[in-house]
Image (cartoon, rainbow, N blue to C red; front, side, top):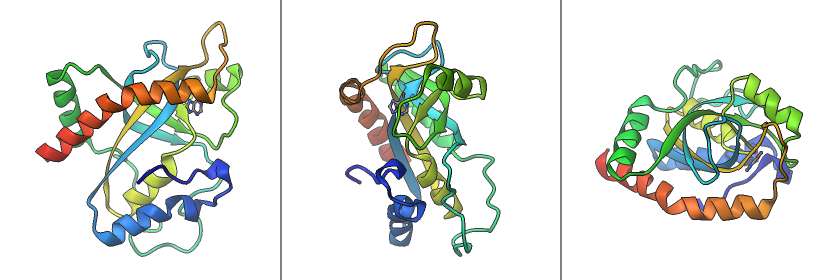
Length: 194
Ligand code: HPA
């Protein structure tokens, strides 16, 4: 995909996740997701890649709300939203290629405001390592459709530390652009080897 539909843009969850439904109909078996996010884990630095190991869904609307779609059960299991074998493969590739990667839990929120200092702190206390405005709805629909998921989050800014700093869309884009080649390299190698 070239970009995605975000909930904050005014699309509803059916629209946000429609591309995943289409890809499922086309027969995809694995979904690669990427995003930009604000790092809350004190070990994270701007521009680093975080392999998403789990997520917390903070969107106000659930993408599977309503009549159950026959691609999966009414109450889907979510014990392994991000495929462990693909995470292990990505770690191996990153080590071979000297690409620094972190692991972490992605908190999905609606935006469009970046978080207040208190919100970053709260999401950290709740178990998040990074927070962003996408990805979780698509991953839920993919898992409900039996699609394996692998995801990378680019840490584009930091929040929740002692001295709050301003976050801008421009700095987010700049950090995302500089990290993209490293992320793409990992995706490319996973595709090659799996
Ligand atoms: N918060 C939410 N979404 C984001 C952030 C953030 O700090 N950075 C990039 N997307």
